[in-house]
Length: 72
Image (cartoon, rainbow, N blue to C red; front, side, top):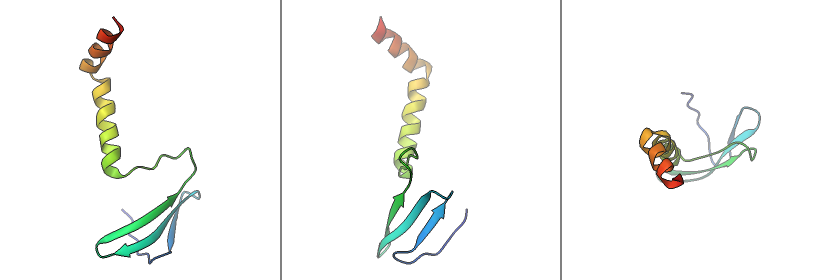
C-alpha cells in the first residue's frame, strides 16, 4: 500500500485519468472527491463488498435453481 499525506484541496492522480482530491478534513473524517471517466466505476469499499457478495449468491447453484423456477 502506498500511503501519501495530503492537505485540503490537494490531489492525487491515478493512472493519468483519475483524480482524488481532499475536499474537507473535520476531526477524524476526511471528505474526498473522485474525478474519473464515466466508464470507471467508483464505489465505497463496503458497497463494493455487498455487490460482490450478491453476485456470488446469484451465480451459486441455489441462485440458478431459483432462476430456473422463475422461468418454468
